[in-house]
Length: 263
Image 1 (cartoon, rainbow, N blue to C red):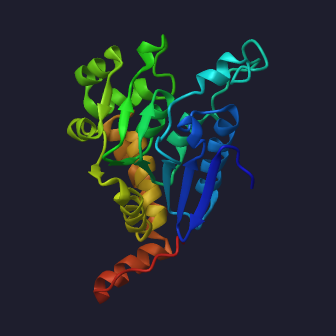
Image 2 (cartoon, rainbow, N blue to C red; image 1 turned 30 degrees about the vertical axis):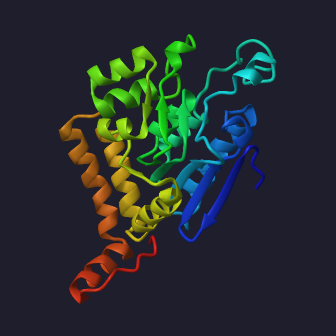
Image 3 (spheres, one colour; image 1 turned 90 degrees about the vertical axis):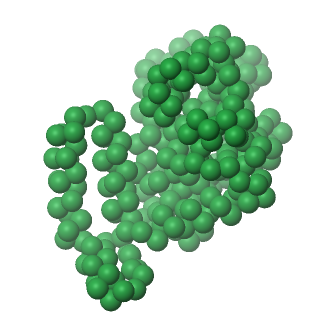
């Protein structure tokens, strides 16, 4: 499979997706958008992949939409006018949100605008000391168009989200950690090994159970407690019949590490 402005690699049970326009701080091109969605669909459908790492090449994570490309007429609306069908089902924010595999953002540099929304759409964020989240939308005359208005209040609460978003604030790595927007901050050279170790730890667990847990957490953000409990029970029944459940119980009895197959 060929991807534009993006690298996709699977090593063991971990897929690494790298935004790859380092000369433009990984500003998003039209080709990258399509490749992003395709890479995440590929990882989500690959039974061997149990965790995904998203990062950027070079000094930046993602500087947002490529405004120079937009201004030249070669951007997202390069064909002129609005699309004939307003359908965001295969857009990166929707694909990222509906991906069942756990996604770890390895925040190697600045994530601005659209890039910040993509970082917030990941399940876990590990930042290097160079990482930044830049909510610069209002300074560009737009709004967080790719999930930020949904994620940010849920992550930090309404008042703090309003302060960050309304002012177009740029948060450094320590501020991101203080606000709970990243799980940890590490030395830059330790970023990818830390993200990989976390991905491997997730991948060592029963994959169907991990993915079901993520689905139920996602549903739990928008349904009542009673509804979520019933949905969880329905997810639990097939897991009880899985070989991985039997392996988990047997490993517990034998006091050893389980070896899960995803069946």
